[in-house]
Image (cartoon, rainbow, N blue to C red; front, side, top):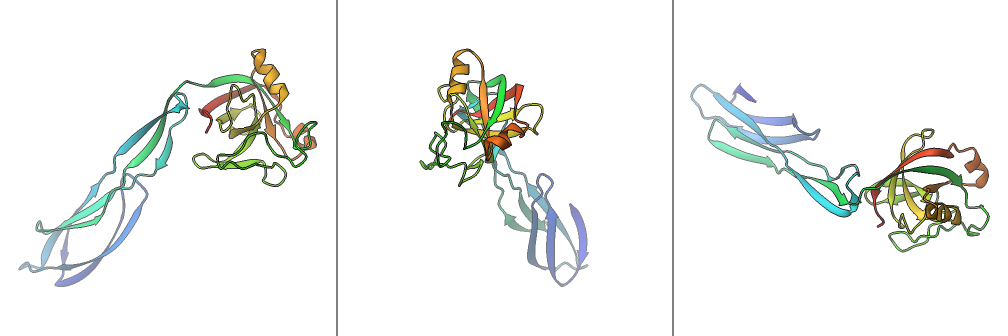
Length: 229
């Protein structure tokens, strides 16, 4: 961007929305113009960020890329071809990609509640969280706040096939596609896996809600986004 300005002592506020990001930068700078005709050329230059890729072997090769760090462009300007001012540093974007075994399955999804037969009296799931604490469906809720994937629904699965902490994108054709985390298990899921069937349970606040929660589907796609913790 190049333009002419006329002034003797001028305070300019540069407000630029960078081309490659939505970051807005407001910076006040003082410019001294000693040219004979009181004109000067100011050139703003964007220093575009680069993208760095992190490959993890516990992330399936089919997993969607995850942006771990948002990229931010840097900004500089030159005044009348002489003075150079560095306004801000660029910050490279960091993207997580998978190099692990792929994990796309088709099977059955149902629902369950903490009051199910054989469930914990306080609603505790069978897996410990990443923080090594118990999670109660009654007191802590139906979601777990994952450090990378955010708030995700709690799932029960066969932990020999889907270890605790496994993140799965679930599409049962009824509910809106969502992300879940394996934090529980059950004999139904374990027996089904031994027979070559993928069966997972989606946690609800009660068994009654699970029956009307639109979870049940025999044609569900489970796409693993992370294997375990």
